[in-house]
Length: 187
Image (cartoon, rainbow, N blue to C red):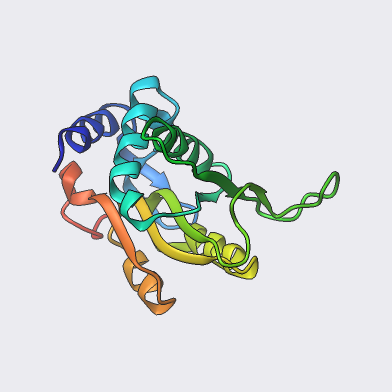
């Protein structure tokens, strides 16, 4: 684990990880919850996320990084800033839940997602992978290639299998075990 990853784990633990009883998007109950936005929208958190995403994706030479709105917006912003700091141009994007009804009527906002583009899909927390799968579908529909899905935290509840089934490389910076939770049992 790099120094930046260690610092990010500490910040995620302090700001984003909660124990209790929580209802997840799927309707399942969990004994813990990770709200990655609380870290992603903090100055140190944004800096560290951008650095870690850059370090884990720079070798892929992506044209764009992003994922589903709203969660991927701060992740993509942090990442593109680090690309810039390292002298490399890259676009950020986010996928809406549905096409907006006004203006340009886009499903994908931002830049870089076009035919032939190399794209990294970002997510703060992966459970079953549903949000990232929606982003993958939108990116592929635009003709771009998904070269990796990168998550900050994997809850170890099936996301890896969902991405494998779609033929997409997947990596998580941390798993729930890094937070002292043994695995999917109990949430």
